[in-house]
Amino acid sequence: MSVARAVQTMFGIGSTELIVILVIALLVLGPKRLPELARSLGRGLAEFRKATSELTEDLDNARIMVDEEVRGATHDADLEAENRRRDAEERRKKRLERDDGIEGGSSAPEDSANDKATD
Image (cartoon, rainbow, N blue to C red; front, side):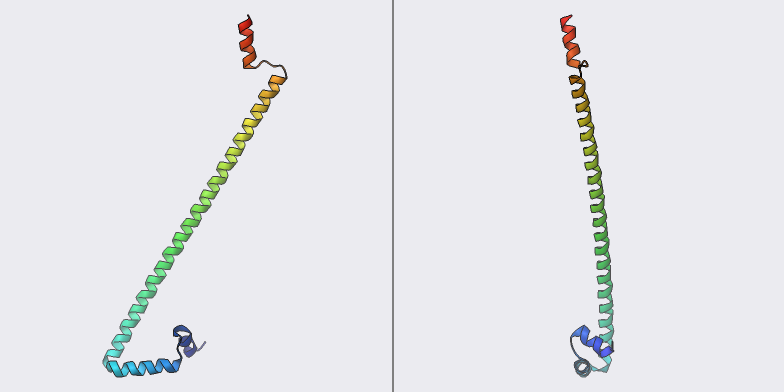
């Protein structure tokens, strides 16, 4: 990509318009003030780019931290759901064992209490 094309793409003006603007600036400001103005404009743009890159980096770091927290929370929620599922399965098995024991004629705690009362 040529420099003129880059300038046109960047500022939305052609190289001819840019030359006219520079000539007018040279006439208005004079040959001594124009380099000072260009230098301070360059410094200002450099500071703006630095601040923009720092802000972009901070936002990227914040996004990464949020993503990690979401992944951690999702993982924790998955583990918690798995633990609840296991607990429910264990309770169901115990209830089935207890119900099978009552139907099978083994003495349940209620039966032993009734036996003691009849003695």
